[in-house]
Image 1 (tube, helix red, strand yellow):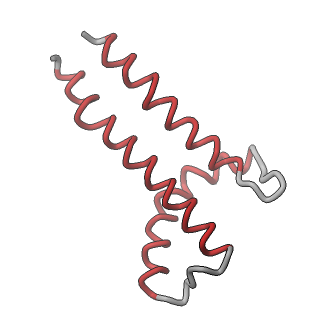
Image 2 (tube, rainbow, N blue to C red):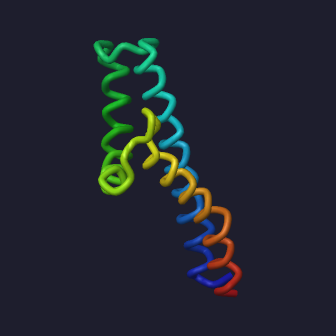
Length: 100
């Protein structure tokens, strides 16, 4: 295994997986807040949601400028999640196999 393959397997793939799950947590938090199940007046919830937003919003904001919400659905989130899935499922294995 080359150095580049090692970096892809041990750094890039897990980071993309972690980012995917952070976006899933962001989605779940936004639903729970919208349905008033979680109250952001709770300091612990506000802090957790703030950390997740600081990670997700810089990625989502440029996409939101191009793709507006349709009928209340955040299409930027869908684009990012599908993009992350595509990168994890197609690009990372292609990079790994192509470098061998």
